[in-house]
Image 1 (cartoon, rainbow, N blue to C red):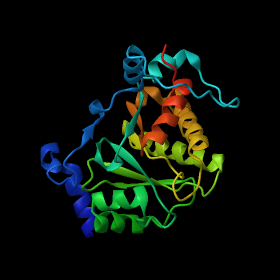
Image 2 (cartoon, helix red, strand yellow):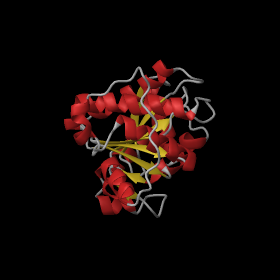
Image 3 (cartoon, helix red, strand yellow):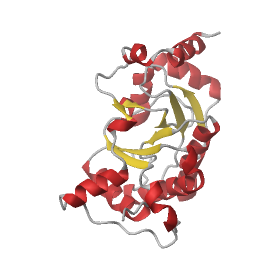
Image 4 (cartoon, rainbow, N blue to C red):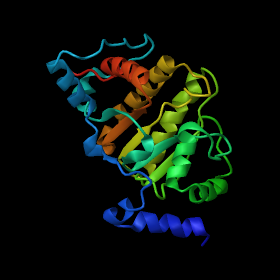
Amino acid sequence: MTDWKIEKQKFLSMKLEEKRKEYRTKKYYTVDDVPTWKDYVISKRKSNKLLPAIPLLESNKIESSLNSKLADKVSFFTGDITTLEIDVIVNAANKALRGGGGVDGAIHRAAGYNLLQSECQTLNGCPEGEAKITGGYKLPAKYVIHTVGPQGEKPGLLQLCYRNSVQIMLDHKYRTIAFPCISTGIYGYPLEPAAHVAVMEVRKQLEKYHEDIDRVIFCLFGEIDEQIYIGILQSYFPVL
């Protein structure tokens, strides 16, 4: 076995308390540390601090009978995706699967750059819209799904990034996953249109597979991201 295979198996077989000593971060968050969308909305309504909703796009339709159930299946988290101790985090990767800047570079560094890069090099790259999985190594997350978003506003390809990532998670029977805001950085996809695509595609997948998924977390960068996602989530995952 090559070194990355040995290291991958080592980290996957570690007891949790042992692995936590290997994290590059001192602060990590389990899924129980991240409020569900339903809990967030209820708490903000009590204090009358819930931001205005952003309406669904006219082309997007949801199955309203599932609203109550699905609002417990999603969350948003404003912070560093590499601190989430869950089954899978998604990396906004480049086609060569070589650690770059932004989220991509942060994930590689936190995992152990040489380890993650060694496994990525065996995957022969990744086309736009597709996704591939590796170990998480020193990350709190067990696995990383690498997906390549489109450059510019191409909703069909962005949709595929979310759909294919969820499908890989389901194929491996993992139950928790976190997404960054794919393509919204240097790839130039405007944040609000990208959020509509992301949230709608996650909604579609949850409508089909909610029994097999415990939580989908949208990992955000800052206040502007928060405002947009809080507005959009209210329309796509209504809490009565």
